[in-house]
Amino acid sequence: METERALLTLHHARLPEAVLRRLLEQHPDPRIALEAARHGGLAGRLRGECLAALRRPDTARLASDLDWLSRPGHRLLGWQDPDYPPLLRRSPNPPAMIFLAGDACLPWHAQIAVVGSRRPSAGGRARARRFAEAFASAGWVVTSGLAEGVDAAAHEGALAFGRTLAVVGTGLDLAYPARHAGLMARVVAGGAVLSEHPPGTPARASHFPSRNRIIAGLSLGTLVVEAALRSGALITARLAAEAGREVFALPGSLDNPLARGCHRLIRDGAALVESPEEVVAALAPVAEALAGQLRGRLDDAEGASATAPSVQPPSDPDHKRLWSALGHDPTGLDELAARTGLTVASLSSMLLLMELDGRVVNEHGRYARRT
Image (cartoon, rainbow, N blue to C red; front, side, top):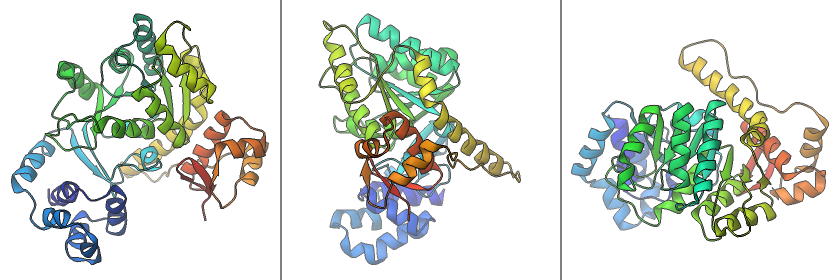
């Protein structure tokens, strides 16, 4: 458990995420990374409380965290870990570490996020469940935030026919809201629950927008079922768009205030959908690419000689047009759409394929050829 102890010590020192990611890239062994943070050149640039936490960690807290990690199905995935989810790694500002309970392979599977109001209409709740059931039946993992309303309906629907993943804003030993403890246990048993926060972390308002970036970063697409104009679901949708992922929204009645957020998303370029099949059809090409990566990873884990197939896009005219439009200066989706004449939806799919193949880099929703 020395690797986990080193990771936890780094985590509790509250280093900036970008600094921690860079440290673990430079020193993939967390024990060496910890020593570099304590005594290397980085130490001179750290705040006093960070350096104190690195050199004199809270041993009682470390012991409690290590006890949690020692239980079956519990993992701590650091930035250097080959099991760290690849799509999350390619999103803006990913967490340097994530705690996981459940199936550690699940974050590698193709996911659709289903998000929306905590207080949906009866129709909105039913639609969230129906779409999640259809996605799970088609083999997708349904990702949401374990909150009341649309999130809970999505998890329930997915569990009835397949698998689901929850991202929470607390430690994984706590459920929020507390009455979702049973649902959380079922999600762990039938999927996985993730958090960037260590065990014992209570719910705080600032944790939930931060949690939303993980939901968006893990998923190939985000579906907003119902949302008011001021809604956390709209934050998730915006973060998904910034990560180059697809955003879908369900239209609603003009008299329903919870439809206004979806209508704004549609005006801003989200795809209007009326059936689960429309979402699945739009995401199928990038899902197949991700499936190829997963097959290669599982083969390697089993010692097989096969390697993951390339996810390089085929040489069709649209891909050639996009490649010609890309330069070495970061370019937004709107500008690429103007240069190529292609839709933002099709560009997002092609760009994600190019990212997975290492040909394109995404910098806060702007794309450039990788040098």
